[in-house]
Image 1 (cartoon, helix red, strand yellow):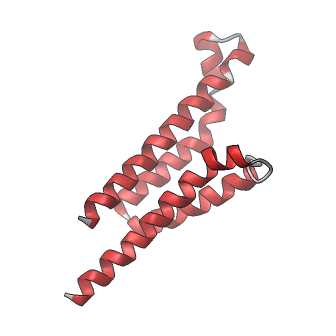
Image 2 (cartoon, rainbow, N blue to C red):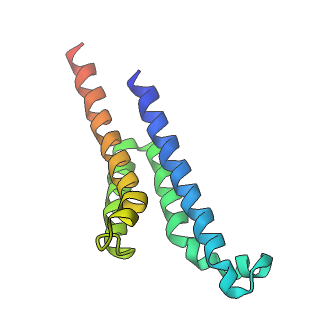
Length: 118
């Protein structure tokens, strides 16, 4: 049961990251006259989200290490994107990564403790 919950958390983390990657790619494209050219010129804006997706993929292989890194990334978004200044950006950008990675860390140790008791 715990394995399924952990996999659901990882998939949700991946889905949220892909959403922000697409948002970052498309949101700045109009400043470059839109279209495919605008999207291609806006590719540098997706680098943080690509890095995050790689970090989340690490959680599928090395769960605890990946979850801690994603947690640190979530905390880093507070300062990098200035979400500490306003509640709504904090709730939509930073909090999902912080909460979900914290749940993943908690589930990792919970599973470990339940296996040790058996």
